[in-house]
Length: 227
Ligand SMILES: [Zn+2]
Image (cartoon, rainbow, N blue to C red):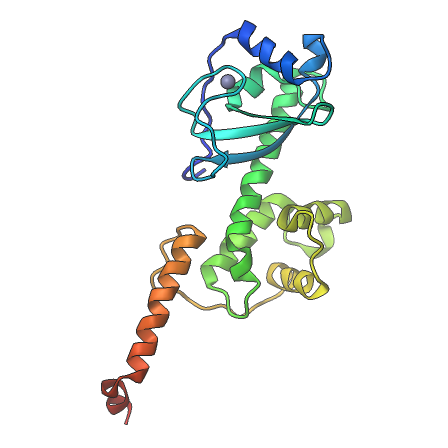
């Protein structure tokens, strides 16, 4: 699944993990306490909030933090994925198997949402690059299950828009634009040096390219070539 967001095996130090779960949960009963948690987000080393150590088992060298939250205690823990898989029963599930399936599903959704967010600004601009639109549509299709407008259930669409914009209510023009990119056709711009890298690097490339173009068009050599 590309760079980052790797899963890390945690230590199997059960007494310590149980203590940490109980300390941060509402119930004093371990079996109940471990059902109080939601899987909320994934962050990696580039994120300022990233911690190297699993907050359940103290394992170091994490590549990603899986953030779980407890709405009863308002506590959040940054942990390795295997601790969630072994010791947490995500809220609303009744078995470890079910919980792990929900974890995998949510993880996929979150990663797709991150891919989308990396190109969202670009896609909403007047003339996005072809590759940004392709990435946007592919990750969106993964979330929505289809890019056939009529087959998308309203609840799924609502969830998708939530993933894209979070708490912010997007304007109608923005929503129309998203629909146009997904279901219609938009003008795009081919990129010469598209490396498929993340948005930040892309932005730098564009800055450089813009500067070069400006210099060129201002130079006499350029004009003389045309004239
Ligand atoms: Zn752990």
